[in-house]
Amino acid sequence: MPNFNLVNEKWIPCIVNGQIQTLGLLQTLIASHEIEAVYDPSPVVTASLHRLLLAILHRNFGPTELSKWKKLWEKGKWEEKILRDYFAKTISRFNLFDANYPFYQCASLSFSYEVPISKLFHELSSGNNATLFDHTTE
Image 1 (cartoon, rainbow, N blue to C red):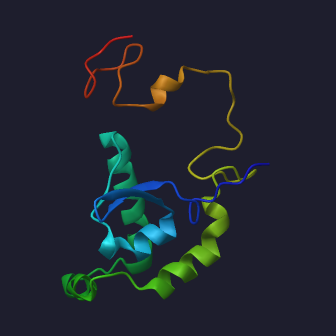
Image 2 (cartoon, rainbow, N blue to C red; image 1 turned 90 degrees about the vertical axis):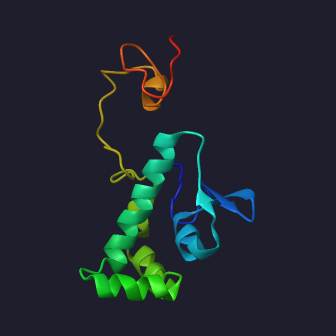
C-alpha cells in the first residue's frame, strides 16, 4: 500500500525568500517565522491549509488567555520540541493512504456515487454548482 505522511512529505506550497518551496507539516510549523506566505493558486486550498495549520497549533499551544497568546507571539516562533513530540505521538494519523484511518477521509467509502474530479475544486464551476470564483462553464 502506498504511503504519504503529511508530517514529513513535502506538499505545502510556501514562499520563502521570494521562492516557492514545498514543506511538510512539521517543517512548515517549525520554520513559520521564516515563511512569507503559505500560498496556492486556489484560494480554497490556501484557506484550507491555514485552517489545518491553525488547528494543529491550537491543539498544541491553544492558550485560553490573551496574556498567554501575547507571550507566544513575543517568542516569534513555535517551540519545536512540543511540535516534534506531538507529531511523534500522532504521526500514523497523518498518513494519507492508511488502511484504517486515511487522513481526512473515510476508509470504507463506497464508490456508488462517483462524480467528476472537478467537483473537488470548489472554486471551479462544474455541473450545477455556483460560479463563485470561476465564471466559466463546462
